[in-house]
Each structure stands twice: as structure tokens, then as C-alpha cells.
Length: 136
Image 1 (cartoon, one colour):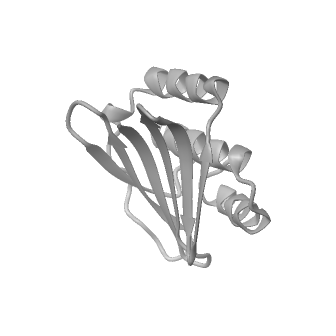
Image 2: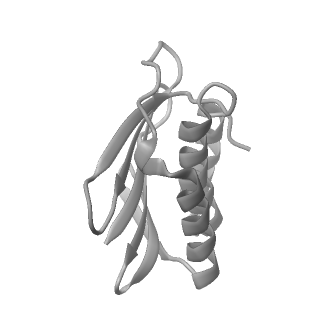
Image 3: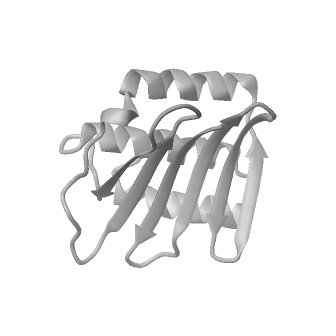
């Protein structure tokens, strides 16, 4: 199984973990918030689009970003390939100009979760998190 994971740890909102997984039994997005977990299967088109964007990004080479501050969000990110070594990096409020690779990785995972979630409460929480990394 190959997994792409982002743990959002904002200062003023609940923690959220989003995992995009590709396994022999299928592809899905798992969104875990305080007390809830939602797992949604991806369509073939969603999976292909995501993987093509990730391949172009080369996430296994993304480095740690600058450390935190007082008001913002820490992002703990991981790429866990089926074969190979797990790669992790951390970021603090990565914008597209200052930290383009970190920003792109977080955006891809976050926007896919926002696209597939069926839970209104989860969707609202995911929308709040956009401002922490300059998401659109």
C-alpha cells in the first residue's frame, strides 16, 4: 500500500489527519478528526489525477520547512511507498511563494479530501484549514 498523509495541527482548530491510500483492494481517502473518521473510495479518475500530480511533484524530495510560530498550523507530512523508505517532512503555514513544494503536497491531499468528503461537519472543518497554507 502507498500512502500520502498530512496531519494538520492548527493553533485554533481541531487536529485533522488526511490519508490518501492506494492498495490492491482499492483507493481511498481517510479523514480523521476528533471523534470521527470518514473513509471514502476514490474513482479511477480521481486516483489517476492525484497520482499524476504527485509524480510531477516528486514528494520524496521535499524538505522540512521553517519552524512554527504563535498563530498558525504545523503540517506533518509523509509519503509511505509500497516499496521503499518512508519520507517525512514538516511545514509551518507554507505558502505557494515561500514553500512551493510543501504547499503543493498539502494542497493536493487537502483538496482531494474536500472533494470527496460526504460529512458536512468534516467539510466545514476542512474549509477552515485552507487559510493555514494559502489554499484556494
